[in-house]
Length: 362
Image (cartoon, rainbow, N blue to C red; front, side, top):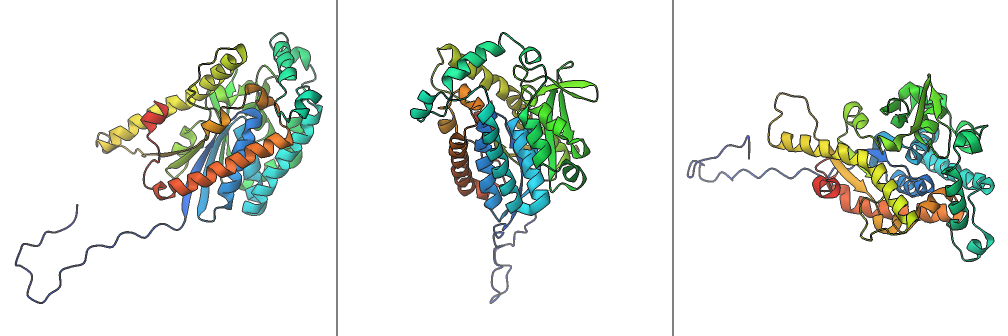
């Protein structure tokens, strides 16, 4: 072991006990992580469940959150709740917000038919088909010229953005895509507003671009779902837990049009994350080889909170179906997933990545 001294045989005086081996370090009682939250419409309720369970864990602290789209909504609500009322406040804020989402969905054009409701289907397949046809024919500037969006009202009513900007309980980063340049824009600190969260969640086929300081923004998932680099540059903690919504891998080949489109969306919205993981893996390998000596580089520890087996069964139509029964089902899946993740990953936090980055992402 580096730093130890070998004592030659016979050099100890008779009667002197041999030195005791150094005791193993006691397990760390509290640990800190950063969170990276993906977007995925109503499937964001899975992330709600994950956050709800992590907030229950007294040994766990949070330094930063980077998020996109529905993940950005979850992150902003959690930041608001933590700032206003601690962990319990964050849990209550998340539950209240998602319940309000379900209530607002009562006026959505994408709802279950009575027949689908009788079959206990949470997916409005019939309405989604015609809505999909309409949004591929008309732009949101045509079918929604007044730019009505209940999400904005909920954000402004439920969240104290001045408090988030002035004394947020954690570091918050929200990503959007600049429509004209195609570059990612990360909003943080005093830039966090309802407009920033709206921009991060702006799907261009459904909503008009969000204008901020003369620039137009679409959903951040196109360029960072979510962006990891804000955590690398702005947080001391090396552990990043990525909460996945969009399955990375599917065994079954999609052959019908909706399945093909769904898989195209999953691949597209995972591509930016996979590019960042490639860079992180490359830098980590160089650090391990000692090729970056003298350069200030941080080896990131990556963890994945995911449940592809459960989420891959839900169609793209269900992302537009925030029915309360469906949302709570996803929440419960998220809580169970986070419970298993904590049990299987706790010992790795602060020490090493709990996944093989190359196998998982490359």
